[in-house]
Length: 140
Image (cartoon, rainbow, N blue to C red; front, side, top):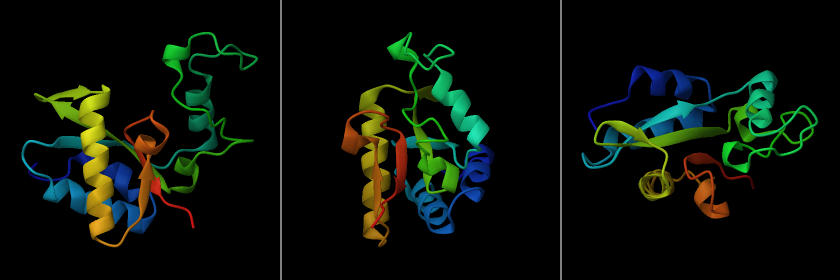
């Protein structure tokens, strides 16, 4: 990977400095075979609520589990995105975004490992076995 795309950079500028810096360095240092980008950083309450509504009816009842992207409603249960402590990353396979499990597990493992090697503790969707592209600063 040659560098950091404009979209990734925009997302990284919106988050916690430590998180943004380590993910930016991971992007720059990634081996050529591991292509990925940052697609989400800081979110407003409204943005989080809109994501929460996906796959749910107006009462919050799940109508289509395949469309669920978050369990955090943005008000009662806040996402770490709302405080700038999380980013979503996604793999590119043959130049195309690929949300499937295998390439995103590889990307998340790389980013979390890279961060650990540089003294930054991240945790992500790999820990809870879904949302593989989500990584966040570990809480103490």
